[in-house]
Image (cartoon, rainbow, N blue to C red; front, side, top):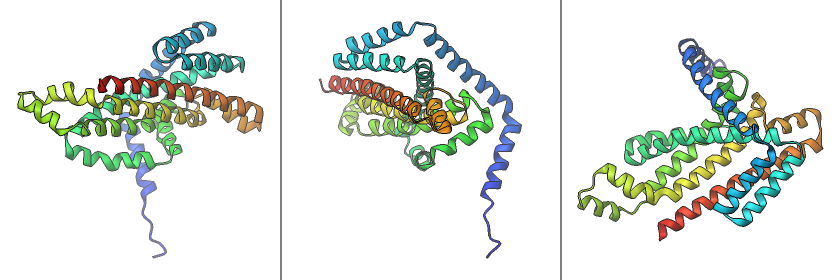
Amino acid sequence: MTNFRIPLGETVNNFFDEMIIRYSSVFDSISDVLRTMLKGSEEFLLMWPPWFLITVFSLLVFLLIEKKLGLFTVISLIFMYGLDLWPETVSTLALILAGTFWSLAIGVPTGILASQYDTFEKILRPILDFMQTLPSFVYLIPAVIFFGLGKVSGLVATLIFAMPPAIRLTNLGIRQVPADMMEAAKAFGSTRWQILTGIQLPLALPTIMAGVNQCIMMALSMSVIAAMIGAGGLGRVVLMAMETVNIGKGVEGGIGIVLLAILLDRVTENISKRFGAAEEK
């Protein structure tokens, strides 16, 4: 019994080696697309003067979402600019938005499929459990293996880590739609597609928006960890502060992350509440 050992690690290594050999061109193509997306979004945000973006963001939140939140937005962004963290804030924001976009682009359709097919949902559930309980640092390893060090691997790790809430809450929201409403729609001759688009998705929208909120928060938390593999941004500020034992710089980077998290959380939360209020009417 002393020689008994399950060769899980070797099996996983062999699997990834085989994937790299067979599909290296595919991973290179994906890397190019993601790199272009990240670079384009960062360059677009950095091409404008900071005061212009601060004004635009604050006015949008002030006029479209909530006045108090708009004031908090302008104060927070000016504070981060005053800490000389504007480029890092923009880099982190671009990574979060890109990670959230791809997480939702994959997660929401997957959640819709899971809500329509019980067998698919049963297969998907343990996979999502595994994804959500696996330590976040583990996601960095395959990302680096397939895409190398840099922002692309950080984006891949972020989108995979942030995807489960979008899938789960989309599936949950659609499944929570009252059965009598769907039975009434069927009685009037509605097709499955008409029921999905006309009844289930609109009624599930508040829950789906809650999934978007959770997706953004998890993308932010992972984008900080992804700084360890070259993702940059505010996470890099905190990482450098740890390496140099610079407490002050670490506090600055940490406050920047907190303010950005509060802003994104409150914005998506208010949007979710508006969808919920609209559905009640």
